[in-house]
Length: 310
Image 1 (cartoon, one colour):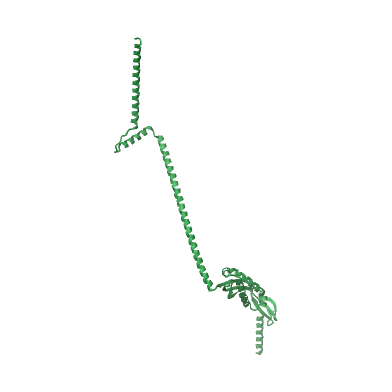
Image 2 (spheres, rainbow, N blue to C red):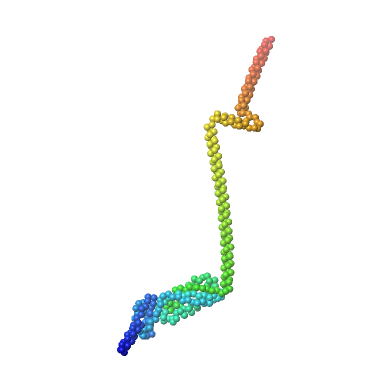
């Protein structure tokens, strides 16, 4: 019975030793192995066999991690105190150096970040700190990476989360923002009125142009209509004979004669007839006078002829 107990204890001890000797290292992990206090390098990933009691493994995570830096008070170049908090993203590049060169990376990084922040903010004006956050992030990343590089740690990114200026500065910023928005509203309203006036003027201009164009087209069409009407009248007039014109003339005389007003209508034919009659009478009277004169002359000639012989 005692023998079985001893055997069981030995088997249990062997199982424990085997459990301590066999390590499974994941892809994102490494083991920094110390043998009798001396660093013998890294192990992993995969199955790693160590010597129990003699070897002491230190696990190192190679994944990117983040470190939150709480609010730190810093003074800008123009002597304005501000409170800033930010996040540091980092990852282990050299596992052995991360174990041998620094004892507590989180604490060391937090203190280095606080002093670096004060150095960076002290070289910037308050307006630059508030408006040029990306520049401040890059400067912090470069300065922190210069320090953590000797620890085998790479600072991949720095992001400032919140910047809290003093209360008077916040009030001044609020007033400035209100004034700026008022100015923008006035400018926008003026621009709108300007655009509206321009649009109305353009509309009136187009209306006047279209009206003038319409009047011109109407005048052209009226002139063309008159021209076509005159052409038509001239064409019809060429085909009208004397009889048709006489009928039209008689019809016009009939309409004039039927008017109730007192008038004397003298046809053109009557004046022509009178002219012809007057001309004939004159011709007859002239002819009679000529023959009488001729006869008188003959008588005179005869009388003279007769008197001469006496």
